[in-house]
Length: 353
Ligand SMILES: *Cc1c(COP(=O)(O)O)cnc(C)c1O
Image (tube, rainbow, N blue to C red):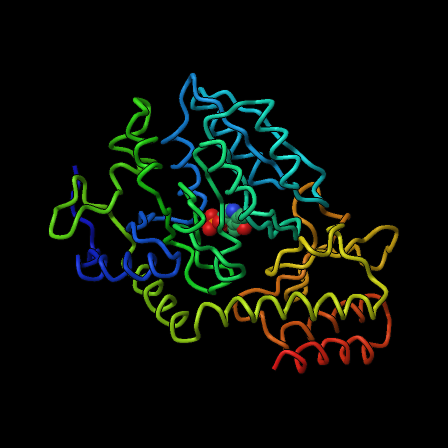
């Protein structure tokens, strides 16, 4: 057996501790988040594997494709899954969630916080209030919410939260994180099926106490982890609130530009739109049926192709220049003059200064 890993320099314990500390600050949690040695979807699959078991009932809210996948992983683990699904041009209401909780009487509830694919954002704070009221374990995919919306994990009482830093924060995608509350750990530890000695094991990846050794030292990609530390430091320097504000203005100015172009948002409720992406309804407009992304304007993913266009105004593109370029792209596709729409975009950025 070849045990030599040429060129592999492990992350030092000091770097690991810095990474965990910065992640905890970003997520407003006092409990050290689990560093996932891979992209965010690995953390989401690890959550499902760690908590699913026969006899456990879940209410899985599906407002986009990632929710469907999560439900499949819970079922693979033998869990009983009730689905609350809405058309993808909507998100759920707290009222619908409450009704579904009362019908399904679950042990846990799961949902995607903000959806980049559909451009919607679920009422996370309200859903978490319901989770606490009904004493449910809460699971959130906040990959596209962190840096675009508030996410105070401890004060909201969220139990298992997956995040990736490559969307709003513009960081690397090869290292991600899962925040776990003490209740979340108890839910995992009481699951005889929770993986051990596996890439999906949150228990193996759990940060040991200060000065304590790892049970299994995780192999965290060093370059990605260092890039992530730099991203988190840059976020701290800009200020998380300012990063969020920048995404809010990007979304608001995009909406203004779309109105000036006579286009409609795909998400029906303007108050529940994601701050990371804006989705545009294509309807009968043949000119919007693009095959390939043009800058940050992209065709819909999967089944949404032909129904919507995605404007990916997140990370470095959450800027006046990013939005203006996207609006010019749309005007060009529509063979329209862009001047009025650009003025509408500018007005929003100037008012926000
Ligand atoms: C991007 C995204 C993911 C997947 O993240 P990767 O880092 O690409 O694995 C999962 N969930 C949501 C809501 C996302 O937006």
